Amino acid sequence: MSELNLILLGPPGAGKGTQAVRIAAHFGCGDVATGDIFRANVAQGTPLGRTAQEYMDRGDLVPDEVVIAMVMDRLAEPDCGAGFVLDGFPRTVAQAEALDRRLAELDTPLDAALNFEVTEEELFRRLAGRSAALHRSDDTEQTIRHRLEVFAEKTRPLIDYYRHRGLLVGVDAVAAIEQVAARIDAALAAFGVAVAFGGVIAASV
Ligand code: AMP
Image (cartoon, rainbow, N blue to C red; front, side):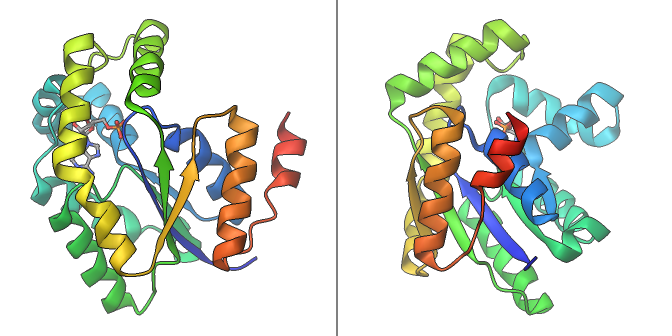
């Protein structure tokens, strides 16, 4: 199975986490979900968790230097030797540039930036539902709105960043999980990244 280096772009609630797990399992590569890493550190009360928590609770981004150092360490772990699916990173242009520098050093190109396209209305509905189901402290109505604003201001510019580099692959992410997975499969295949994704889904349902 070939190596895959993939970024998942898209607002909170777009379904990136669910698809990241499936793609990483299929390719046997690292699943790097920055929000999950922060939440684990908060739960364990580590210094990193204590730094991150106040930003997360407000729905703000954790400062670039903190996130970049954490992701660079994570990418050096053995599972990322077979490639990676980055879920939730980069979220700012500075983060994207840091990733570019690291990949250039490693001489490993990015294969694609998969952009999850979801309407604001649908996002709000999903995040409010997740809030009720998971009791995430950053899923209150006010914080959800703020996180969507932060996305629009800081992260949306990355869509053009990757489009200009010819790496952007758009996916309509308003559908059932299996359907979005099939769309990802088709979009990546059309882009030249072969993902025999249907078998994974069939085996897991
Ligand atoms: P997520 O689960 O990806 O929505 O991330 C939850 C929270 O973790 C975000 O609202 C941020 O506070 C923080 N976070 C996750 N990834 C990043 C990142 N790449 N840059 C800055 N903050 C991040």
